[in-house]
Image (cartoon, rainbow, N blue to C red):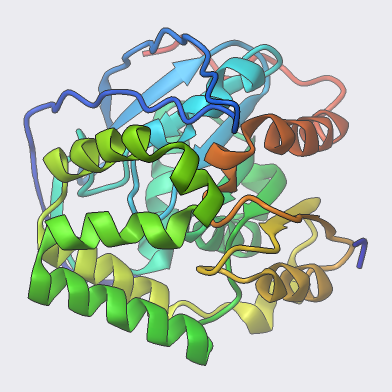
Length: 315
């Protein structure tokens, strides 16, 4: 170490929703103005997913966490699209993607990612997954290794231990008993460090209002939490041969740093980078430092003769 797939589901097309970008910026409060190139939805067979593409070059597919929004990665687009083609998307049942009422599994979410890659004619890509997106990335590295050039596992976990199960059982109770408003407001306390909340309170209020306005049906979010609690591919992590970078923060109270250490120990030759501060949403709190850690890793594992990101013309 260097420091149920057969679920029955129904999809319902939803009208596009206006999702305002959230520029978290650094702790000094600065945020970069970034023009968001809105892209269409694309069919992956049984559903259509909203997606965005930025830049040119070898593709990097960013997978967000439980929230499932493409906009989660807004602070990464400018830096990463200078060197790569950046692809982000709204998960099935989230945002502008088709609404789906089904028993979610992490494996089903991973199959959606492969379906998106197929639809966009992406044969191989770097994958960066955060939290639940990191669980999805683990499945991709285990079950679809030929589709990955490298994988970055950010603030994710191996399997639900007693702490993780207590936390998400409680969060699900908040959602189902007290409703989306309380669920969204309380989530801020888990996602961000105390000092960052104090410095960015008004900005966070705007983000909470945005998240609430675009909140998915309660049963979808609850099913996604169930999928998180059921996820466990830890006994197969030794099979991962894809170059892997594990990232975490020592003050993350959602996926504590010991999960990052365990992932780095179980995945052969994995590299690990732990930030002393950043919380669970370190990609918002420390976007520059996150980029400085991830970009060189991706560059070092980009095929020397990498073709353009897609095979054939874009849709």
